[in-house]
Amino acid sequence: MTPVTAAPRRGPALLPMIKHVIDAGLALKGHLMEAETEWGSHPSPLVIGYIDAARLARPAGQRSPDGADAEQAEAADVEQADEADAADAVSKARAEIAEYAAKHRLGLGNIYVDHPGCGGSQFRALMISIERFHPQFVLVPHLDHVDSPAGPATTETRRAQIEAGTGATVRPTADGPT
Image (cartoon, rainbow, N blue to C red; front, side, top):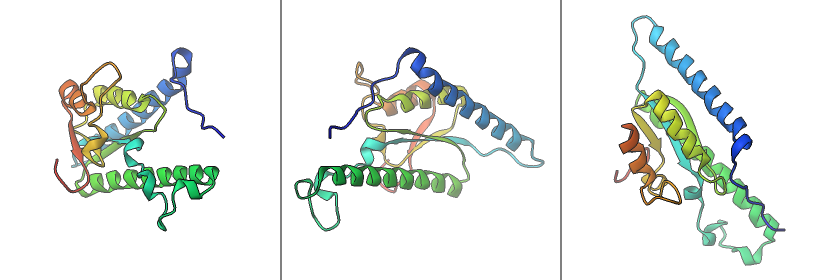
């Protein structure tokens, strides 16, 4: 069975995604307005999260804890296990970003997740959200999530595009060099 890859969305096919981004932005704006109206309190600095799910994938030799590799398993079983591992890794990364934001008393907006084969659509949605809401930080699990090129026609990294174009600072949630 050959895997099906998603074709990049164009034109009218983008409308549901654009509506989702707008709806999420309106919900975030409503949340911020509520936070500003509470007596004697100031809103927390706004942050947005970003995860490149391809950066969470484990190397091929580490698919199972007992050391079995893809040649010894059914192709469908390996594919299902990889999908489950990817979903678990994304859930864990989301939880780490949320925990970091709570620990540092940051108001967390959306967490955008780019999955392999989606053409970076969530990165584009992230950039739209940053331009609209001006968050102080973009939280990522590790800096390698934003060290890849921002697009096929540019050598500028996603991190450089975020920081230079919007003024938001990219901040990793994991311990280590920043």
